[in-house]
Length: 230
Image 1 (cartoon, rainbow, N blue to C red):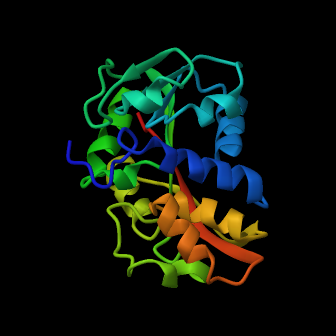
Image 2 (cartoon, rainbow, N blue to C red):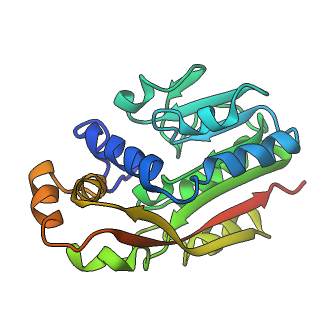
């Protein structure tokens, strides 16, 4: 598996800063609860959490049915609730037609060829099973884009995600968002946010000093849903 910008083992605080910023300053929750509600409502068990991180999807899911978490990072996986397994998303140690649902939330852009993981999701889902993934837009958070080097398209931005999923699953359902989604009230909040966007603590603190706060952020992206036919 070819991986881009995978820093969870060498700099786990970067990931945790991002989670903290969303939890503290977000105006709306992340996608995890909505995905969990749909899987539970449709009774799509067992569920597979691909690229689980430290278990945010499990926290949103609660305990209504069996969910198995998988991640390539042992640092992340150590904090994820069991059952869990260390695994490459493009080569899952799971038999065919095993799961009722599979979620790959905020992770496929780490792969140079995300369609490989999408094919694996298709393989391990039983007929009628649901796959769901999500990605930010290339134009996400325009209020702070000038603070970073010019962002190049990733392998899985929301602009191309539906087509990549459709190439494997066929018909897809897309839920897009473009909304004011977070308010950073002060310099400390902005520094935490910037830390979560791959700046060091020193870089984030220095950059935040020159930005007028409070600052409202626009979030753009999409959820993509698809059922396995057959």
